[in-house]
Image (cartoon, rainbow, N blue to C red):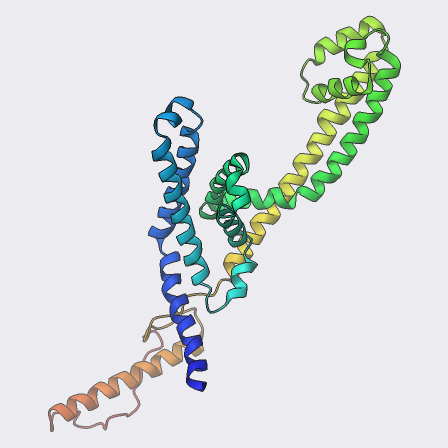
Amino acid sequence: MTDRTARTPRRRQAVAGRCREITEARWFAVLVFALILANAAVLGIETYSGLSDRWQQGLRTTEYAFLAAFTVEIVLRAGAHADRPKDFFRDPWNLFDLVVVLSAFLPVIRENGTVLRLLRLARVLRAARFLPQLRIILVAVGRSLPGTASFLLVGGLLLYLYAMVGWICFSAEDPEHYGSLGRAVLTLFLLMTLDGLGDAVRAGLEISRWSILYYASYVLLASFVLVNVLIGVVITSLDEARSMEADEDAARPAEPPAAGAQPPYTGDPVLLRARVAAARRALDDLERALADAAPGTGPPDRPAGAARTVAPGG
């Protein structure tokens, strides 16, 4: 029983090591990225009715092939964490890949063509795993959501206030744009992008000269202040995402040096003395080996292991 218990971690480590060699190889990342792009191309082909009708069977077979390939990929990624399964579920990209791939096997989703197409489209987002800059942007978008929610709340309140003022002031003379609260909100939402601002200002001046204050204040607040606040939130989130990516790279353990390799010299005198002592021992071992191989040819005047004077520079 003890042998089986001891054998299980070793098997897991062996499986994890073998799978990790595959998933961390460059050719594996290139292959998966190419499959994602090919899957996106097939999805685009299916939008053309003539091609999809002509190649229906081939496209269906290709979809099954993509599903099988992505399933093998996620199994290999899970196998790379066989010795530490919890780490697999701590990575949000692994969870996203797992949900996207396994959802295609659920009977309810497979029968719903719209949901299945959306899941197949979600596979394209998996390309962010292999593109660090795109991954940073997606993380930044996710981190900016709380600030964006506050922006939407303030923007909605501003739209409501100006829509009510516009309905009160312009509904009788301009019912097409301010005849109701919904029409006023739609008009002001389009004006937020400065689309049709000149026509709106001219129509307002025909109603009242004071309308210029209404439009000027709204454009100043909505198109300049709020939009710049949103840009600031996104830029701040982008900087935070870059810092997180840099911290993750710094936290990754460095590869251990090869057997017998010397650590790089950093100017430390202690390290220099250790190197000098190691060189002395190596020379002494070499002299002893030569003396044992050819008796009588060893160093004549100095016994092996005697101290030498070595310059600090090497």
